[in-house]
Length: 96
Image (cartoon, rainbow, N blue to C red; front, side):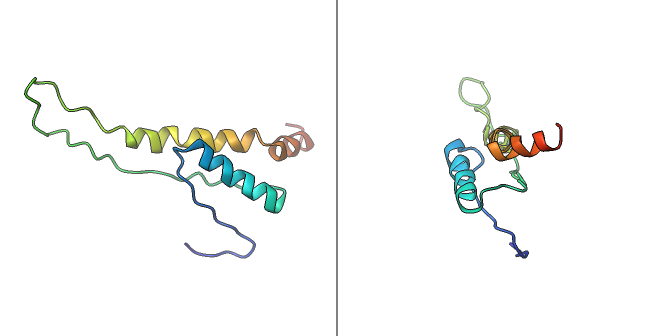
């Protein structure tokens, strides 16, 4: 991870709401604000679509980690950002 002046990086599992909330709280307690959230998470699928079927003929249960990280993971990060008091106050100042 590269370093930029006046930039602080925090890492969290986007599937874990409490972990994300703790990161946001840490940032607000330390800085009193949150300027930018780069909610960049993504993983490639791991399901083998050509795997042999089970004895019952029913395909194996798909791995949903990809959905939970790539799609569901963005929602808590966005929710925490837009519902924060700092974000709302900035939006009011700008007339949003």
